Structure formats: C-alpha cells, structure tokens
Length: 118
Image (cartoon, rainbow, N blue to C red; front, top):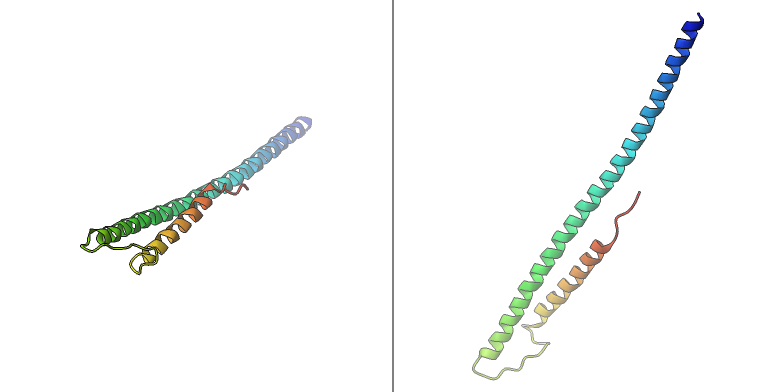
C-alpha cells in the first residue's frame, strides 16, 4: 500500500500543479483579451474621429473655394466693388469656415489624447 499512496500523492501533486497552471493561463488570457478589446475599441473610436476630421477639412476647403468665388465675382464686375467682412454673401461662409476650424481642432485634440490603460 505504501507504493499506492506514493503514486496517489504524486498524481494529486500533478493534478494540483496542472490546475494552478491552467488557472494562471486563464487569468493571463482574460487580461490579454481585455487589453486587446480596449485597444481595438480605441482604434475604432480614433478611426471615427479621423473620418469626422477629414469631413470637416473637406467642408472647409469647399467653403474657402466658395469664398474665393464670391471675392472673384465682386472684383471681376464692371463697377469697383468694396469687399467687407460683414457683406451678406460673405458672413455665412466665414462663419462656416470658423466652425470647421473649431471642429477640426476638437478632433485633433481627441486624437492627441492617449488611450486609457487598464
């Protein structure tokens, strides 16, 4: 019986060691998956912000083109035209350009922030 007890104890030690290793492996896997999930979420969030930033940059370019067109129309007419920042044709375009600049700055700030570490 002494040999049987030794084998049983040896087997029990092996089972306990295997269980401990398995538990540590599971915990490491959970931690890794959590970190990977956070990284993927951060990447997705930043991708959306990059797309929004690009949309505002494109809109700003369109507004700058519209502003240039209005200025050209004013100066290419027969009469000498005075161009002022408070012209009814110019005010909404300038306001939209300023709005785009503000939104672009917000997106750049969001992109500059570091991701949360768990």
